[in-house]
Image (cartoon, rainbow over all chains, first blue to last red; front, side):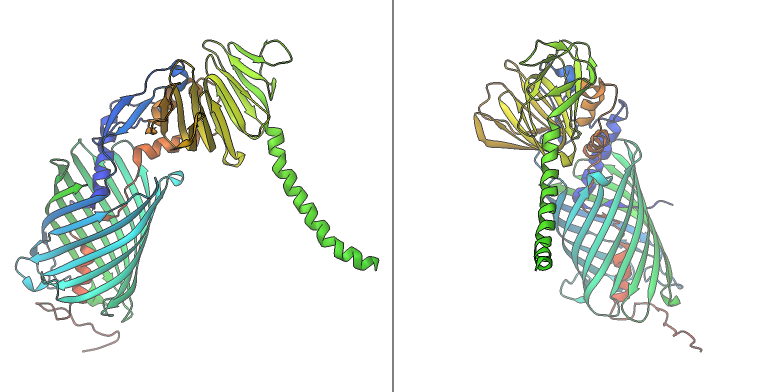
Length: 304
Length: 267
């Protein structure tokens, strides 16, 4: 089974770039792996001086582009889903087209501290069961901080406003939620082309309209990514999410596996095969379900 | 009466003792830091002082303020200070330090210095430029007729030209500054590849033991190679949002959703 996980917006680009760097370097290993220039960098040699032998090789990692905090992205996943209504039985399958448009801004405050602002709208169109069509709008703002001295531990805190609407009618809201998301993520670089990431996050609902679907999510995840060529990568992730509902004494535990195979056509266009599988257990049996999704996506992303 | 007096004096005496202890503690590093020992000698290394003629340096020789250390061709030396600051000298280098606390002078040639964070701010005079750094590992190269270089391998520093002291360049880990000896304005620092440098620079690899800051240098290499992203991973099939949507639907779903049976309920 093929599963999917791809990073959003600018980070996807960064990870792609980093993995490309890693792959290019694989041919030329030294004691400590050097940082080869990426597509966004050029190479300049430092002028020679009498003590160059004492100093060692001085290679400038010259940025040919300034840091670009804005990312505009447009993606159109289309996938088969085995369980449209997420029911424990009488499952119905369908095809879903879920275009998503996002605009993100990640101004860099210091080398390791970033602000984050983002807005995205994703609309889920179901092929046969159009009554399930819905839109999801997210507006988010937060901080990301990473600690190089602690194995590049990444800490995030973010406020997110989520609004669900019927179909593609932006005014027909049927749920809104204000949440605080706190996340800690620890990357492990196995070698130059492979990376494993461990993380935990909590998603705390501060207020919602309506109350019965309101919940807090507690999640841990393990992700893996590998670059097989300069343009082709595979990402996979496993997540366990505990969804603690505020009402009805309901708690769900969802185990989600996802994976993607991604081929980068250009710097701004990527084709992906996508898949995910979720198994959810609830203390109310009626909310148990299994669902599998399998499909593809075209993603466009521009930084500026 | 005496008892009352003793009682009123006692708190002041304790305070004074504490203040004295803190003061002595602060002064002590400055006093002991200005004495170093030679911890490694490779080929031609000499100690020069005003009082006596130049003499070859040997391991464990003390080096005091006012004494210069000079290396010859293909030669290197290492000095260790009491506050754990380490200075390594490259070939054809003249290095000395004066009476002022944490102030060093690179006459010409190249040095590597590394100091722990608690050593405080270190000031290095290198030809036409001065640098203030703390908790760092850095390399300085200074020549009157060739390029001058400042490289911060890990840590942060501030560099300025002696003839233009108001124009500072703030530097951080993995940055290099290259300027001619007659520069009147410093260029902007650039990023350099720390891993390449620490793999083959003799100031790093040409000594019998590793620098105490070696783990920090490796961490900096790792940071340059694997700077993480800033936003979280997203699955485009978005199972969390679909799950939330199904649970938040105001109307029954278009086909039957099972009725929740309360625990213990029976048909």
